[in-house]
Image (cartoon, rainbow, N blue to C red; front, side):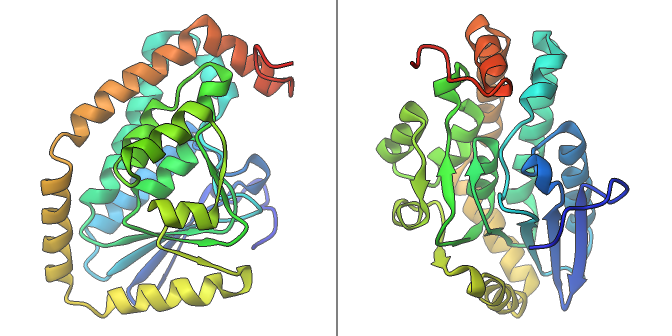
Length: 264
């Protein structure tokens, strides 16, 4: 993937080509964390794309070795107060809910690990293509903050027991298992990721846009009538876990690169 960005480069890149808008998370040194800045950039891009009739398909990609490592624990720790933490998760939940509301299909192009809210981001996209070395994990439970908000999207992709296995154990799964469980559509070697994603995007871009938009909207309406309420509950749950003593202890251990609490 592309090199480490200069400090003046945006956190999110956009490139449009033949009806396909590619949004690229552009903070590889930080594993493309979903900071407030990144969430704002994604929300702005999705809002603009929703009104852009020239865009037929969206590809969500990332620079660096990892796709997205989730939220920035240093940012959450600095917020300290529960209402402020809830505000961050409300911002994230709004962005996540924007994806199924877009008239255009969204393809996650996963070139590396997707953790916690990064796994949620993959699950929330309409389709996903991953390299065969990608890993997916919702490891919050290990550190004292259950991945409640990732569980909303993951639980709507995987069978319930598979989702609960990821959420309760915090163990990573490989790309092939992620495909078998329904988290991604295709698994390809790294040297084929660009071409396979481009082929799928072109195929979707050739479909009648009004038909695609109406079909996507109806699909999610009948599948996820209570999505907003689920995100509201999950947002409060995960915010409370970060504000709890267990979550604070886990954040300190994670940031300081120490084992999680209770693990020798």
